[in-house]
Length: 124
Image (cartoon, rainbow, N blue to C red; front, top):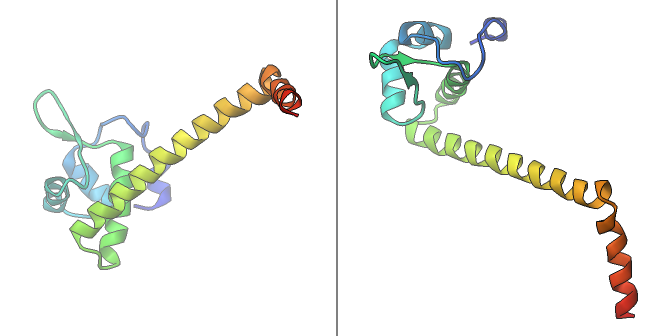
């Protein structure tokens, strides 16, 4: 999917695309999307009637899958790559959250920064 098409997509987490539209946007067939779902590579939301609904996030993931397939990586390999990328994203977010909390404790509070020299003075 090219970036021009992606720029016009609704909210990234909003599941609005039917399978035929998602397949066209991703440049693959409907059966290919079903195969990717069977292998756990993408998990579209379901409407009340049970039809698949793809989000902008799903389309971005499909773009990544299509790129990996074009590099000759099999579906099991793609599943592992996506799993590791998802874990890396989660870890990066957690690191950023902890860093922000640490910086707020040290610089925003002031007391934490002042307490360290006092403890060192007592140990000397």
